[in-house]
Image (cartoon, rainbow, N blue to C red; front, side):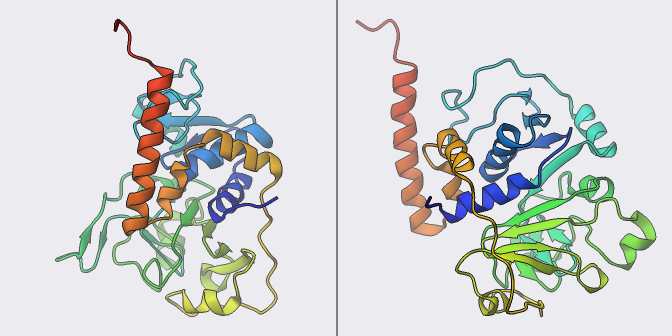
Amino acid sequence: MEYSLDELMIATMAHQLKGEFLVSSVTAFGALAALVAQKTHAPELAVLATPESGMEVTPLPTLTLGQFLTDVQRGIPLTMEEIFDAIFCDLFRIWINPAQIDQFGNVNISSIGPWEKPKVALVGSRGIPEDTSHLSQIFYYILHHNTRSVVSQVDFRSGAGNGAERDQYLGRSGAPSLLVTDLGVFDFSGPGGSMAVVTLHPGVSPDEVRERTGFDLQVTDIIPHTTPPTAQELEIIRTADPLEVRKLELLAGEEASEKFVTIYERERQALHVAWPARGRH
């Protein structure tokens, strides 16, 4: 069965989610990965859509956050204190999409360039410092694996990776576990907790990974391929996201703008059908 890169990445991300955890879904990729996991091999997962809607509201991608693509059900409300309690008790999982990740798994979502005069100001570290000091599993994904995103050293450390400071102050809780990119799957089993290749996606060569990585990543010529998504996983993804909002995360520039307009128009039409105007004659 044919599949796209986004579907391969989402299914790969879903395979890592298992156990009785609260899973946060703050992006289309994260939401769909949580949904695939819950509907296939991990029914015990509790999925958090947003703090406002609470958990056990199936989070499906929309542009308007409308309900027409969402399973209608009563959410279980959670306070921010309860969410942080789950983090501190290691009962929380999340797929984080950083702007930069380096060879030891330090991540950056704060700024690009010198701190004193950054080229780009981003969202700030948010909850990543807590995640990278308390969780026994830390998952990352990068949609555009290149020398600007997978770097030798992050411009600002929003979340702690491996190294002497972790060993001295934090211990192993919060250490990076896995990275999924558009090229392959990586862990941090290399020397000193550095990045290592686990699998490469079909069609990706070792040379391409070397060229698109901002440090000397050891890639052998014999690397297994990433496991393709199953027919069931593809059906879940496509049914949950019929407008393909997930693909916006992979696109940029004019291509992203055109896709956005297409999705917006299709969503507007679907909303009109789902909630026709009342009281008109």
